Length: 126
Image (tube, rainbow, N blue to C red; front, side, top):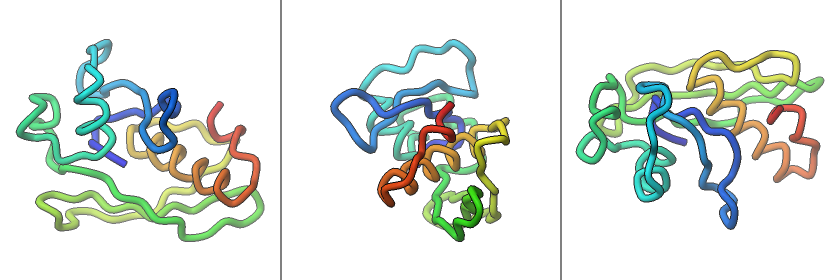
């Protein structure tokens, strides 16, 4: 993942790692396919997207830290110019709703991890 403003919803048809979603920087903004695939999903879009240029960071990156008792701990870093500017951990479970783009991206990342591990990811995507 992705641009710090990107709120992913579900994989695009025909793709396993490209997500459709919305932009938290401008509610209701239309995101054309090229921008969605190349910028929203990958980050580093400052030169191509005026909304991304407003962010203090260029992208979020994620790594699974632990998976215990239905809770997936996702370590994250916020990058600017390929250097971390902030780091943290977010716990993802079916009962907790995502409130921010970071939390939603971590939720989608955790769901992909569960699916690739042969586990039920559906509760995280509701």
